[in-house]
Length: 271
Length: 283
Image 1 (cartoon, each protein chain N blue to C red):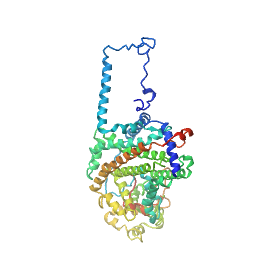
Image 2 (cartoon, rainbow over the protein chains, first blue to last red):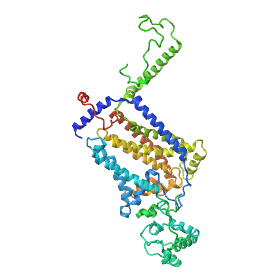
Image 3 (tube, each protein chain N blue to C red):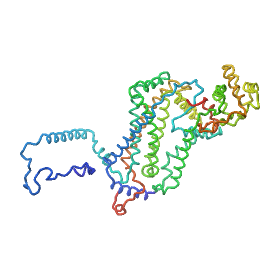
Image 4 (tube, rainbow over the protein chains, first blue to last red):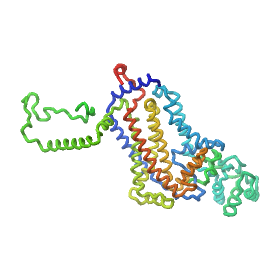
């Protein structure tokens, strides 16, 4: 906007303003009505949705899946969409920072005199694209299951083992059924390839970079047994994974370098 | 006097006295006759006059000592361009949501204990035992959602109407700062109930900050109040959540409002001033 355009704007605005109505009581009336609506909606949400309080925080737990408030879903989801470890800091810091700076400095780079939305196609397309992207990520985040949930239906005797496997972050590298990553070998039918003892040996003495599960056997031999039994039970004739709309597992979207390991904890399911 | 007061909406304007209705003689009656003259004024009228005079005195007293009335007049009776619709209420609605958060927050703070071992129990106490505790906590918890939605809608309105352009650039910058502060409120408040959900979400949030280049580990240590999550962490979030951030938000809202009053509310971009009027207008 050059000086002439600025003056023209001020002139035009001054005319329109003088034709308007005083703030009190006209605008005040609308604002008060809106405030009443806001208050009623808040109370209605409080009454209908309540104030949940989950189990008490426990820093030693390994079975809790982090869920932020919904308006941070898009930030969380960004982490899962960006896979290569070298780019993770772009997802955590880079993209949000750039986005915020673009937003903050908007009036300093978009300086055209035109204000009508239909005559600012670039600005409007940019805004709609941004909103669409954020909404998409938010919906992804909202429908995401826990990052280390295994959606296989297993016999009841292997249910414990499934939980142990999920809690120990195996999905960070291995694919089991529909869940997990493809960094290491696919474990979905590993029972056909390896026997029970071979699996146990691999867990104790794995090839790099897989971590050894010897500490688990020492600390909790029962869990280790369950883990081995579960992995050995993974065969071709497993029941097919359920096709109904179970929550989409985010581990299948990819953990990148910021999977369970990156966040320090793993989980076996929500809540 | 009539020039100073604003034009009132029709239903608020005092009805001009109608001769027939007041029971006074009309024009045809006695030309100089003031019927009430000489008679003792009625008690109701006396009271009314006294009240008017009294309140005028109080207002005069305050105005003489504060000089507030020109400011209030300027603020309340400034004109809002025609064509302003319900979209224009989103900003004040956001502010109202903030006020509601402040009020419910004050009541929650009366019962909350920012201690790792007692925080969860104090929130459980609020939720299950304190009178209306669950309602107030629910209002605070969902009020954040309402405020975030309103702030985004307000921003969308500002964007679509091109209202961030000259001369309101600084207004926009303050608004974005308010958005960031509000998100920081959401983040810091999320830890306070200290249940599993809030702890682990905050752990992830801190880890995200830790991944920033160079500054990351320092930011993370600051957010944790050390290397571990403990009472220092909780006290830190509590203090940020109820002192620093709301104080900053209040101050920023003040600046935002000042600029609204100073620069005026934008007219919808599809309104154009009449050419003749425009030629007459001087600035």
